[in-house]
Structures are given as C-alpha cells and as structure tokens.
Image (cartoon, rainbow, N blue to C red):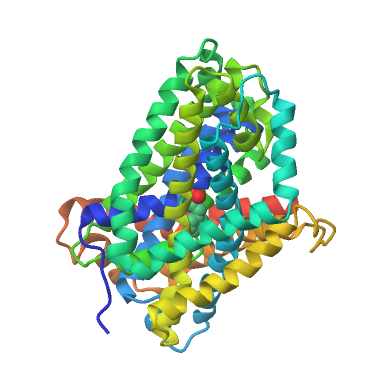
Length: 448
Ligand code: PHE
C-alpha cells in the first residue's frame, strides 16, 4: 500500500506545529509560569526548548523519515532483531494513554465554549463562584463525559479522513486562525489598565528563583509542549518527504510553539494582574480565573467565545497527532483498515477517558500509587514515559544509528550546504549533551 505523505512544506509545518501547540501552551504553560516564579521559569524554559528538546525533536523526525514507518515499525526497520522494538511498543501505548486524559480536558474546553456562547460568564460573579462552577462541573458525571465524547469523536473524524485531507487540511485552516485569535486576545489583555505588572512578571527575570524544581518543571513542560517521547513526532516525521529540510522545519516548529506559549501568557498574565488575582492559582488558572476576567472586561463575552474556541482548536490538532500514532501502528503492523483502527483507538481512549473523568467525582477515592486516575495518567506520561521515551530515542539516534545516516538525514545527502555546516554541532548535542542533561534533570526530579 502506498504510504501518504504531507503535501508540501507548509503542510508539514502546520501539522507539526499543530501537534506541538495545544493545551500545553494555553493551559499548562501559563499556570507553570505563574507557579514557578514568572520570567525566571521562562528563561530556563528557553534553554530547555532550544538547546535540549529541539535536537530531540530533530532526532524523532530523523527516525521517522529514515524508516518511513510507524513508531513500532521504525525500530524494527532501523535496528532489526534488537530489543529497540520495545521502545517502539511503548511509543505506541503511551500516546493512547495521553489522548484519553487529554480529551477529558478537551471536553472541558468544549463545555466552556458552550458556556461562553450561552453567556454564562456574567458580570458581577466573583472568582470564588467561578471556582465553584468549575469544581461542580468536573465532579459531575454526565456533562464532562459528554464533552469528552464530543471531543474524541471530532478527533476520530479528522483521523478517518486521512493524513492529507484530514490532518493537513484541518491544520492549514486552523493554525493561522489560532494565531490571529490569540494575538487578538493578547492585545485586548495587554491594554487593560494595570496590565503592565503582568508583562513585567513575564519578562523581567529574578534569577534567584531558579532551582532544581524549576529546571525539572521547565524541562518536563518542554517535552510536553513539543510532543516529544511518545512517538508522535516520529510518526509525523514518517510522512515527511525526502526533500524536506528537517533542521529548518524542526526549528520553525519549536519557535512557533515557544512564541505561542508566550502569546498565551501575554493573554493571561496581564489580565490576572490587572484584576489583582493570584498567578499561582495552578491548573485551574484557565478555567477558573479566565471566565471571571472575561465576565468583567469590556467585550469580554466575545473574547470568551474566541478564547475557548481557540482552546478547542489547539487541543484538536494535538489530539489528532496522538491518535495517529496508534492508527498508523494498527494499519501498518496489524493490517487494520484506517477506519477500523480509528474505531479501536476511539474505544480504548473513550473508556480510559471516562475513568479519568469520573476520577474527579464518583471515582475520586480510587487511587493508583496514591493518585487519582486522571493524575496518575498525567504524571505517568508527562513525568516518566515522555522523558524516558525521549531519552532512549536520543540515545538511539546518537549511539545506535550510524553517524553517516544521521548526518545524511540532516543534510539531505549533503545537498543542503547550510545544514552541513551546523549538523556536526547538532550531532554533538544529540550524542552527548541531550542524554546527559535529560538524565540529570530526570534523576534530580526523582531524588528531590
Ligand atoms: N504538545 C501538545 C500540547 O502542548 C500535547 C502533546 C503531547 C501532543 C504529546 C502530542 C504528543 O498540548
């Protein structure tokens, strides 16, 4: 069977940026910035993204394009008869776990979008009331499960449409729209009276705040935000054509992802400061604080609708990239039809997601290693499976694959002179710096 490829460079970019840009940027990054000291966190994050995670990102694309196979098949092809296929197997299972809880948060966004449409965020409501509203919603049974189901169904429809006419087409329309939306909201927020404090908080680092926990959180977020270590970028890399410039596309993606996270923070932090709220609010920041802000600012109803629409769109382009990993595996290794594979992944993610959703309500007493199901899935993937997956992958590219093959992928057989000049340095990062730094941060997070 002929494998599909992304149509052109813009298609590759929007698909990869679509995967990277998601709830990680709009929901996770701003609350981490708030919890870990503002600009100091941003400063460390920049190092993590561009020095450590960007080379890992390139490594994943290299493995994908070199093998032209799904996450499991890739290791079977590049290292036949070795145990590396187990890394492939883990890379197929992890994204299904991630997509199940990711689509629960996607479902919350769907619900909040409808709340915004029906003008439920009314002026005069206090922030405590918004908090109660959120708490009551996520701990109920049917509403969040409905949101989760709608969100997962949307994901499945785009996946069934295929790589080119589904993933690529959706991304090409939605990603530019998303940038426009978030810039509009950021400008609106930055012009609120008192917003300057928020911008200062984001851009004026207090270096004394940097410690091991800040570094671990920043690295974990960089992994999460760039979709690393779960076979996603590898699978998308396998749809990248031979004449594409891997170094350039990866760098553009990481830059767009970083800019988007900063834009999201510029939309949120100034508003938080303008209204005298607490930036250390934690994971509830988007769902509890923002509706309050929207309710109390001029044109807030419109901003609310746009914001939650942006949240859904961003989350969808990421969830399809998670979903595609399992589908590509089932189609290529287990001979499923694309539709059949999509249904199977849907069923697994749907059931697991329902358990995650219920863990905020009726199943809140059910604990795995002391965590609720949702938190267990989140911690297991973001703090363990993703960094370990990324670490093993970069070791694979740096130490198992032939150096000549890796350089060949980076330079398209030597035909890209600009890339030839920097490929040695990138290879050095891949072989020595990335594995050591990631292992060090991972271990320090375990120890401290
Ligand atoms: N990068 C996505 C985000 O920031 C999440 C994601 C993680 C997507 C892993 C794919 C793989 O929301």
